[in-house]
Image 1: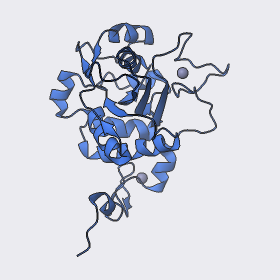
Image 2: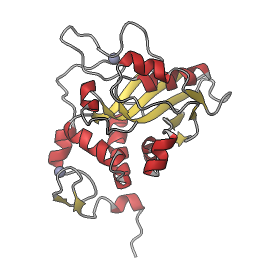
Image 3: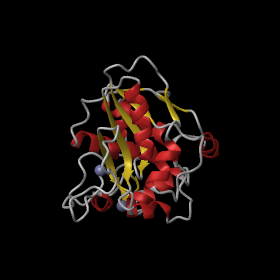
Image 4: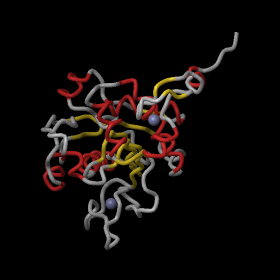
Length: 248
Ligand SMILES: [Zn+2]
Ligand SMILES: [Zn+2]
């Protein structure tokens, strides 16, 4: 009998494309949906946070200060199909999408040349209420699968929440930054000296959460912090257009 690793079977088992519902010969998106998901390569992006630059060539999110994180790698934009996939994963709690989303993020990480970088993959910790409601942490599930795919180490407790805080939907960047300051702590204090960390999250909106997490990791000695996110919000209003349904 032929024995193959479980991941290899996924290339041969037909399934319905999670984007359009069309039958495809493998587990994942059909070629049309994959093309649709790809960010517009012609649009210049901020080299630090991956937000498209405005007409003047400036990043609307980075502002004058230098963020604590060094770079963001995003699998796709939080728009159209990308937004649908994240909402189905987070809001409709389709945990089965975790593998596809981790695959897409792994491809972006490889394309960005980041795969040899981090010593650890660490997820942004979920709020207790959201964890209780969903039964799983969206960033943690992706971080776990991503680490396996890329052959990297992960620590689900690398960052912990000190405060639950309110949801961020509808807040502007300044209020988000204020709300997230002091909300996190390093979960492995004393062991991060010189380490390179990839912080995994589902959606990067203004970067306030990543900024707060990166700051505590840097204060704990991390040499480099990258944000690896499923979706990069390219228009913050898009994240809030669901009437506050997006859980963060
Ligand atoms: Zn499709
Ligand atoms: Zn930027």
